[in-house]
Figure (cartoon, rainbow, N blue to C red):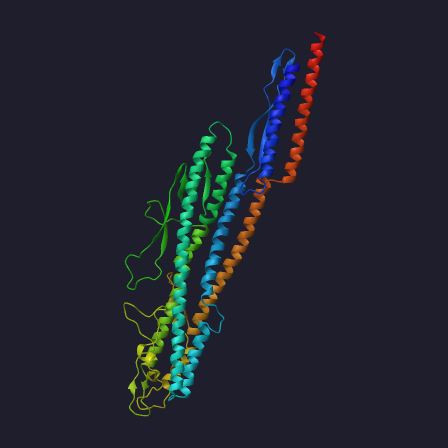
Length: 482
């Protein structure tokens, strides 16, 4: 009997030593990102059968479990996907909105107002060269603002393209790591035990993928996971299919070359664009393919129709050399562009003749009226003329307005979109934090709780040592009786 006591006490010592080691592991990794609390599950050894009944043979650690809830993981990753999308959309739209910086004394609204004012001043002094010089300067300022806006949009597009490319590379790298962890986990669990630390590493990678790519995870019976992106398989077993970024050139080609060629995400060798996108990936593609082109399209329409409207009125006027009559027919105020390269925000500029000589700016609408101010008045009145700008979106919706009204509508629309994205990002971040707290309530390490567990295991360990001492005393007594 004493030898049986020694055996039982020995299993108790070894088992509680393992349990204490598990508690120590939890405490040591309490602040480790992605670590899941572990628990040593104890079970009784197989008893020995005697004529008078079954006698226990001790205790053992049947397994070390990882505290994790798949449903809570799915909830967190779903919220994390929305958070990644909203936060990225907010950041990119904020950059686009900052291009205009309205309201601002140096912005387009004020520049257009001063441009119309300069024509009004010229109408009051139709013979003034100084007033013409102011018109020239204000026209150049308006054109330069359009050029600057277009340049800044191009810069944002370039940086977003680079960011998209880096994100795709990151997705490919993380997907490859998940596939490698699948192999290691399947191999490590072939003996029936759980590869807890490897699973934690894999879950951390899956969390990252959910934010940047909006992936979905499907656990497999052998311990591996399949990862879906859009409606396609990104990771399956030990294989990760790479993503790539490609430009989607329209077919047939448009008459005017596109400044903002659409991009698409492709999976492996598939000829189709990956869809639907989610997470940060979706926000970047949406801004590249929709928000920046639409903003530039509105600016291009505004610049083109400003040049057309001003040129139409200006070419109906006349310039004079002093008071000599008849006057000379005026030319274009802005460069009219060509059929192959129409005026856009990037190309708007003063006509070379007007840029070189402000005296070539017309105020009179009469060939024999050097003091006439009809053209100057007509140009000044463009400020209030409705429906001078028209833009049709790719979806077929049409927007119209005066020059100032159209521009303010553009800025207001961007402000509303940015504000909405900011609100969405705040809500999504809150939902993600809540989902993470729910998950941490299951898988996170509570050091106070672990310290209580440590004391409990320590007491069991000490009790086992006392059992050995008692068994030793019993054995000594038996020996002394022999």
